[in-house]
Length: 148
Picture 1 (cartoon, rainbow, N blue to C red):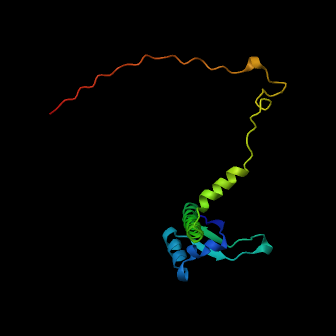
Picture 2 (cartoon, rainbow, N blue to C red):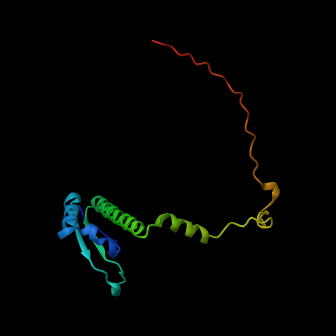
């Protein structure tokens, strides 16, 4: 039974939900998954720009623990977006999606762009043709209602 170790960076704005008041949440997670968890501050000089958790224990338990931490971080992120929306009166999620859709490059639809590609392997004779789908006759079903 060898120890497994994994590192999970978390944005500093979402660390508090994982730690909990007086480390209560962190201690509950340790107990629930029977793992060791160490919290470390960001170390930019060590190429670790975000605070991170080091989780040690049996491999399966470590992965389950990391999933739980990520779930808490997602809750924190969702709470942040909800607070932002209520403070600004806007819909942050929708406007963000609309903005990204506008900036996305569009597929060209000019006739030149839709022509067959020019390559030595391309030949119109090699195109794949779909087999015709046989037409079936519609059958009428008779339904009888029986009263008891």
